[in-house]
Length: 144
Image (cartoon, rainbow, N blue to C red; front, side, top):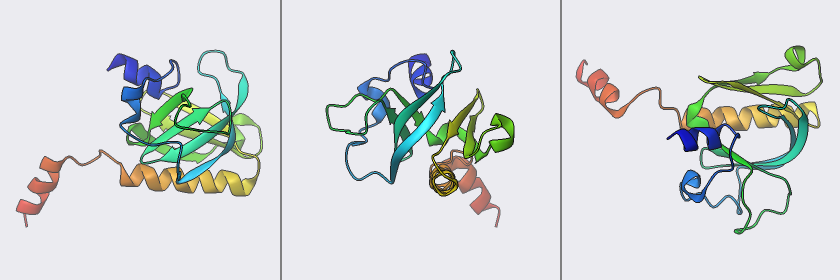
């Protein structure tokens, strides 16, 4: 679990087990260049991001194939919020993605790109949310 968490947060290169069978190389829900702040060394690096099936992957290159290896993967089910962060970063087109453990920062190329990423990841967070377990849903239904 620790290695998956490190991979999910970008501090270690993920292994194939972290992809959950997601074919990140084809038909993404959203893909594009973003600038991401590093986890330990707080430098900004431009990376190609792919959102697919509840996971956000990033790569050094935009040519993503079956043989590509993501530099990191974030399961959106671990995410609590995504919102604009221009004021926090003191930079235009910034946004943040927060988990219980940390907040990651990104910069898009335009206001439209920023809003598109926030909306796409936000929708994915809602779709893949673990806020209610199956048992809690059954308990809620049985109270009617």
